[in-house]
Amino acid sequence: MLTSPILLVAIVLIALIALTYFKRVASGSVGLPYRARKTLFSPAERSFLGLLDAAVGRDYRVFGKVRIADIAAVRSGLSASARQAALNRIAFKHFDYVVCRADDLSVVCAVELDDASHNRARARRRDRLVADVCDVIELPLLNVPARHGYALPELRERFRSCITPASTVTSKDAPHPVSPLAP
Image (cartoon, rainbow, N blue to C red):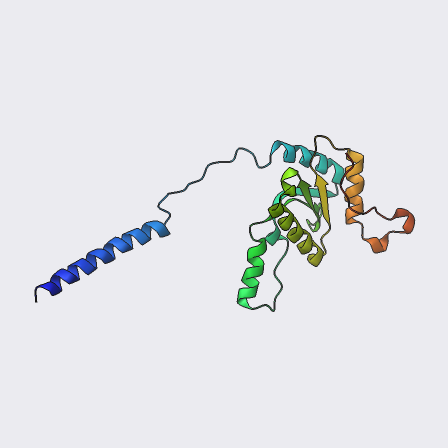
């Protein structure tokens, strides 16, 4: 039969073409489509970082752009799919800043610098998720509206109030609710 070898060659050719195509797709035929970012922070984020460093003092260190998944682990006891879904919700999100104790680098609070983009519906959903995760893991969250200038004493007080457990504070020393800095 003459058609059998021709059909076999055609199938082999199609298979080779498909294999070559899938190899290119799997290996990223676009190469490495990356470019260097010149800075880790925007000018506003960098400026605020300097102020936050000063506000927290020598007993603390500030880290920027820390993945939420590096701070919040998915609890055990979930099915594999539920566990993966929970991880997927936080895997690509980060805190703007995380403040840790200088001596042991234990996390004491997260800080979010909220610019105008936080008024969008998608950002509000993300912010709600971040706040909910912080509530569940009992991590204080300090939200600070972005602006041109900040008062160092006010930021220092907000930070201290944020990290002071309410049960260890007397009524005269009670922290204020964590609210936006006054303009």
